[in-house]
Image (cartoon, rainbow, N blue to C red; front, side):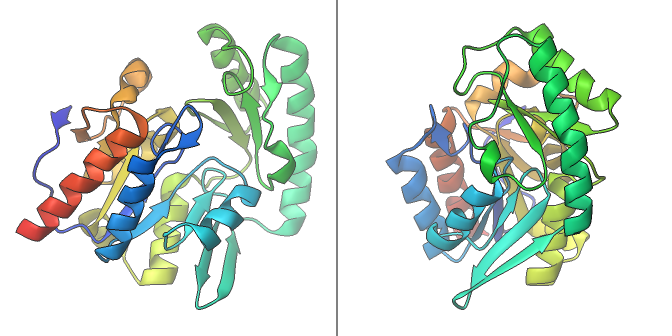
Length: 261
């Protein structure tokens, strides 16, 4: 991976993961939050792309200095604009209900077979997926057990992605990339080729890999190092610092590069 340097073009949109990219040990610190405001005030559209649930995304879209949020690994996007909340769901309410019944069966199997794993504490405000906690509110479980959780999801025909804290599973063909591109097309009239040129992404874990692969200007904070053996597609640029301080480093470099271009 390269150190932070020059980018392919002037960056107008920054899509970013939240957990362990903006946060440190679950907290949003002053460095990352100030960086969000600095980007916003410079005219860069910041768009969190996260595995976190609909309940969180409703608040983030309304309260943070962002131009929208893609949540539950691409299950939907929310945008608060002109005092109105716009919500777009990738699958219908009827499909969501059917998928939830299937996910409930997977949940029972995982909880029975994987000691120490638990349903994520934010599951109650999720609409599209099932999140299994392997280290957020429980002691970290072995890597082999994390892999088995992924395998159980896939055995049932579900997608599964490993974040820094959860395994998220869902039914459907969407992911972070497909819904990010849908959001950019619907809300900002950007084609995929324009998005590739003028957008950047920052992340930290395996569920960010589709974004690392797609965006030319892809970044990771330093804590990506522990997941590199899992990744086929690496980010183009690597921050020196972990978590929120790494994000602040990335934001500063983007602002500097935009001034020079």
